[in-house]
Image (cartoon, rainbow, N blue to C red; front, side):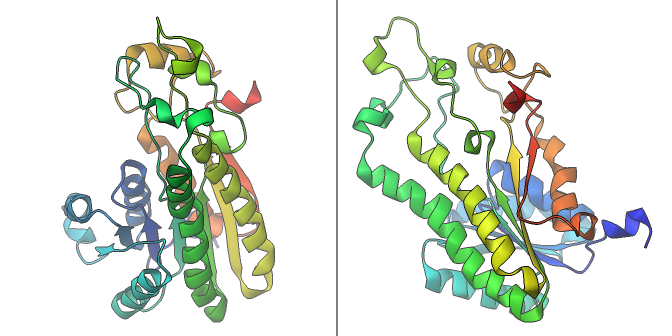
Length: 279
């Protein structure tokens, strides 16, 4: 095989959870560009319709992109997702566990929900975040991964975060003229979910190694999306490359991790963070 052929995923079918989200659509774009069929799985019907509409504007993609309304915290809903995907495309070859709740405190001037500080963090919010980001990935991996194991081929890609390998620097979110007990923070559940996905990745990689199913994790850093200038200045000072990522800068890595180009890689993490975790 030529090097180029290793990246060929034409005819493969991918399910992307949280597929209507900002990065979910980028993952889909990348796989569509290399010939895959993509199922965007999301709980938000309006965003899902919009995302499918945007991604199907190119004529060559229209028959290769679809959206499925799903609650990934519900096993029956995920079973239905798999059944619909197999009915439409024949099988599922790639699962990207991308869905997660991610509260944004990157606009320093915004009002902040102080209940999300660790001392007052609601158990209900914790349970909800874990259910979507971690339990949802477990349910999808169990259901869709078993389908892959039965046909002895498949790839599971878990989208973690740099905050899965380092602690959040809470100084990024500080506001002037607030006492310490009123400062906004990145919630604890986000770090736990993203760390847990790395553990899930290693478990899956060894559990189904003899079934031809590979599992890896992508560790992206922060992505530029029009954040507050104060926040941008602060976070850029923590990144050796001096900037956040452009949303398109992860697309090639997604193709690598989902294709035969990474055929001897499993149970591992690929960190793309501008060098932030080096410091």
